[in-house]
Image (cartoon, rainbow, N blue to C red; front, side):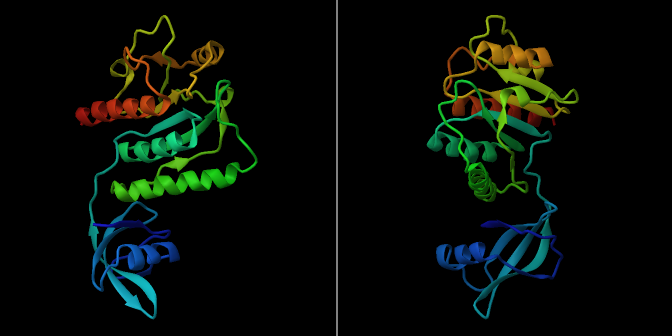
Length: 241
């Protein structure tokens, strides 16, 4: 069943007017017939079944039934992801959304091969759209937030959360995600770019209170590291439930 996000709070028995983009998708891509059923999630993360209605060249959804959905992780995971090349970055956005990430912060570090230009706002909008489409596909009720670009030195330490950095070259790393993840604590996870972090950057985060973890014996690509970590976190916290 196709899912769409509404930019308002919905009520039962309401006739909801789909926006232009979703209307085009319903009519021209999905070619839905009158009375087809779709899922619509409103801005309060409420999920409804809606019946497609065509009136005067406009596409509406008659909100017919509220649905209880449990598709989110029990904790919030924010990933500070070192910038990587476009194709890999888009793949990361899509798959991290599918795996349950809550927020994504594009991270500028010393070894980033991607240069940040003046079109940052346009890129954030494009990143957000990728996350929305992935949320629709994976039937989530939450669209991850893509935040503004940030430098490593700007990463906050939040004492109420588990704050961790994955780093492959740290000689003293003995902890894994299994050792630090808690079932009732949100997570800040820092992952480097293609070239990894410089030791100085890692030490700055350690000085703030970040714990360094290993993701295993093998060296992972940047986008693989984030997705591997999210998969492990998901398995751990959903098992706790």
